[in-house]
Image 1 (spheres, rainbow, N blue to C red):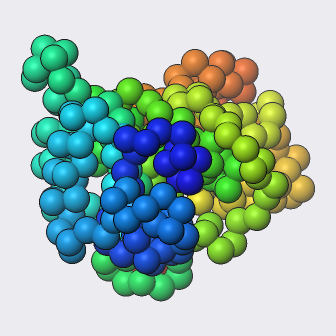
Image 2: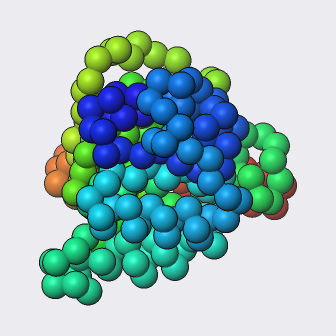
Length: 261
């Protein structure tokens, strides 16, 4: 976020409690570094946050809007799907929402109940005009977020809250991007293609290791990284090789978070 703010003066970051560092401390110190006119708290009104972001992006700004929890993105659903996603099409290319990134923490953490544990990515993957991106660790989070902010399309960037304090890896301090709509083969294999994204990648990596040890099954593990538009070529090539495909995603069921296979 700091790299994006420093590189482009017309980049603004805003959301509920963002100026104070945010609930998950993702924006700590950014108001002091970049000024209170560019890093701002918003009202507790998700529709207003999304509407403000759409307006800024149409006016040529880079808007980075935070929805504090993905569970509360639904009041903004109309602004995102009916305005941001369609702006370019409905205006015949005269206007667009380039420079719009909506960040939001998603998924379960073992607590949080019905309104702080949902994984709503599938709603947005049905909407032409949007890009939907989910990182699996700190390295991909940084590279994919910078690429999302600089992309010429509105992006929904879902951050797995389970990984905020549990995922650790080496991350370059400088500026780098990971291309959107490009899946990564995390582990090569020959018997079955396993596809996932976000926090579920850790579960899948453990499952692939377990079946390799117990049954000698060789899994090719793929992280989609971008869910819309997704990398069909990488997945198709893998399935042509293995002949089998298994997809797993995180879903909220009752009081528990379970993997759906």
